[in-house]
Amino acid sequence: MAEANKPLLIKRYASRRLYNTETSDYVTLEDIAVFIREGREVQIVDLKSGDDLTRQYLLQIIAEHESRGESVLPVDVLTDLVRSYTTQASSVVPQVLAASFEMLRQSQTQMMENMAKASPVASMPGLEAIQAQQAAFLKAMTGGLMGSSGPTPEMAEDAKGDDLDTIKKQLADLQAKLSAMTK
Image 1 (cartoon, rainbow, N blue to C red):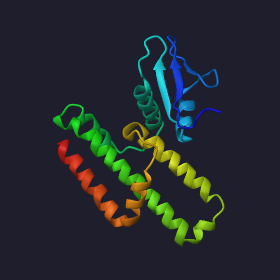
Image 2: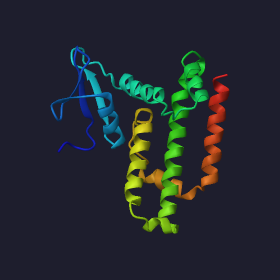
Image 3: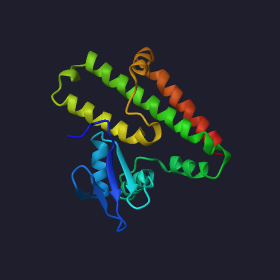
Image 4: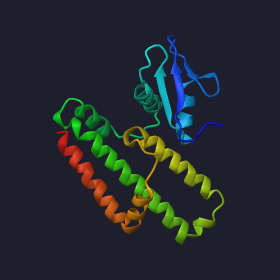
């Protein structure tokens, strides 16, 4: 079995078909989305030029999900992202988004830890599967922006000291700053 921390290499042929180098078979965008949801890092490269096409294909996966009505991103966020490509704020937007997703990851991690400690839900069958699915989702949502697979032990310790209201306020502040920068 391949190393879990090593990205799955997908090669794009001239015919635009995508080839999984681990299993030696062709894959679809939906297959790649499944790998990511399962927590796997992927790297998609053009066979001929060697160019990294990962970002392009991740955006295509998001666009396909959005067009099927599986909307995750509100229209105002999409609008702000488009604006950020044409304004001076574009250099700050990736850092703001990364910080927002990091705070989201920390607050959800803390919430799940608190639920596991203090709630009868902790004994609910399947809770571990839900937690694993949540972790895979967060990793898929933030992997391209953050370049990390989760909070470090130090960040997890820091998150324990914060309460959920503080984290919500920080996220709201960051969102307000992002909106102000794109106007």
